[in-house]
Image 1 (cartoon, rainbow, N blue to C red):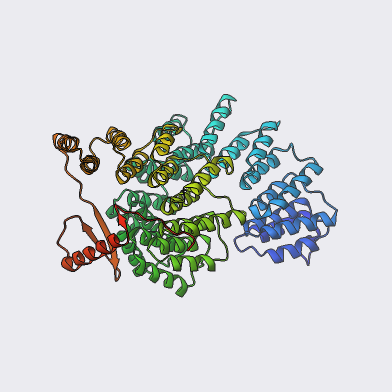
Image 2: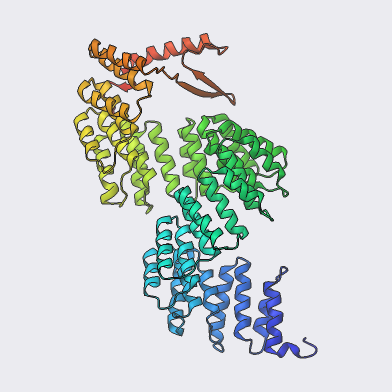
Length: 606
């Protein structure tokens, strides 16, 4: 082309630039040199090179090229340039640059172009600018199916399933016919809401209107059925797929593991035609979700034997399994494994380490990992606050909570559960009241049942039983067993039979088959020397044919997890364990502990 002079033809040069920018063996440096040395390159050449940078995941390069285009001043960007630039600005870190691009769109008069308009909606969603995106959408004079799909997909990606559904009903009212992309959004919304009936209705709509069952749509339907518990429907879709992708295989593996069908999940895992870490992560994650932590760690060992290299997600799942088991030794080994194999210690993995050490009893190591982390998010702070609460370090938990606020991070529902739990264990009644009130007044978070349960527990432990009962009466939702249980156990400790009776009867209304409530009610009557009522409670239990469910606990020693059931003498070290328990009980009584609560005042300033 150079020898024949064809390179000076802007159309011919644009074909060469397009090849260099978009082919699998793209060479963007070479492409850019051709572009900048071509006489009078057309807008297509600039656009295709910008697109090449985007597809090469180099947003900064794309934006710098646009800047050079403006500096040359020969050509004006067109309606194909700005959708590319808005896509380049989809990262929250480029929020300011994105707003600058919007200013250029207004300057050059492209705000009414449908392609630019739809790309703007997608970018605003990626930045979390929900009010702005709805304002742009509501005031727009141009809307097509892509506009509606952009809005629906944006809502789904932000977890706003109800808003996505509202948009769909509005779209139907305006007689806009949905397509396969729309249905992916609707099926995904049903999945997020775990609404099986709604998901089935959308599946039926797809069949009746003969919409193409594309691979992404089929995968979305399978995911919906898996999340909603209909594994048979998911398996039927999977079996009928002409072409199965890694996502298809992973969805089924995760589904069977999540519901405890590990044998089937394993069979599918070994049938996957390509070796990849993703399905292994799915089966381990499914085991963790199903509380099959031992099996999750066994699968991690199998994964290593299969020469599949673990990644950050693998380690997060394995650390979660250790957290569930209280398996500190295995957790420490995993921490060494992460260091030895140079697995990137990002925010998510660092948070999982903090959580594991805290839940496995080594709060000092949890604090060390926390302090060494370069980046921390809300979940990281929540993990350390909950860990300190778990270890009874109430004042430290409060200090970390306040420091989190000062750092500019906003607490979420889980953070408040942690701080309220800390106040509960530490007896910090006033602080607990303040934090509970701040949830709605300062942070615009509506307290859920678990938050009310924490507050009832806090007030009950401190002896404010009437206030706790009043709080339950004024709750905006019906109290569950956790809320009434917190009040009932506090009444037992403080010997308040009248309120305790009411709480116990509420618990029995919720679950008449819970043998533990009858036993605890009878014990409360017995401690108050109300023998007739105690006998009646036990009689009710016998009449209903209920037996006491034996309690169990587990502990990890030298990497092995030992499980114990009440009155179980089968462990080979049973005698030594019993002697140790008797000794510990005696020491607890000397320190003033009774019924699990201290009878003396804590000195929280020490």
